[in-house]
Image 1 (cartoon, rainbow, N blue to C red):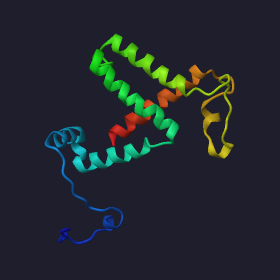
Image 2 (image 1 turned 30 degrees about the horizontal axis):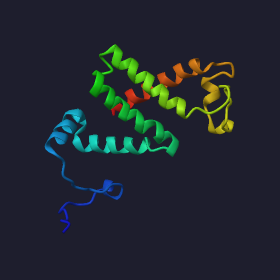
Image 3 (image 1 turned 90 degrees about the vertical axis):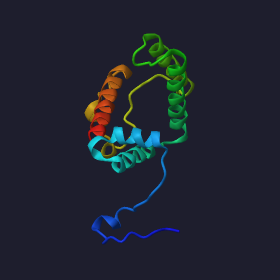
Image 4 (image 1 turned 120 degrees about the vertical axis):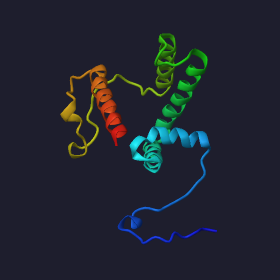
Length: 152
């Protein structure tokens, strides 16, 4: 049986739904700690939204799911990859093996595949950029984006 709240509806009620669910105590504690001043509800919402952002196509999931598993296994066998050079090397080599399985044929040549109005690539990259040069820009942008998301 669903209990109704005895509160006056707000403008936000038309945009969101109040829900309740059970959490193990340890998970609740971790979420509370991670949420900081945002509050646990906002932390849960932020993490749920992020989980949908990572749901791409099947081929992308074929990279991201094994990557998470590899990180866990490296940690189990060799320790934290962030603190151990050998563990880091194993992680990088393992991820490279997974990437190589999905590598398209042909030489890497920069082609702007989207219509100009749909892409900003030509603002950040030149046709003469190497994959390594492009990777530096993409990695920097991804790290900045993640840092911004953590602030909110």
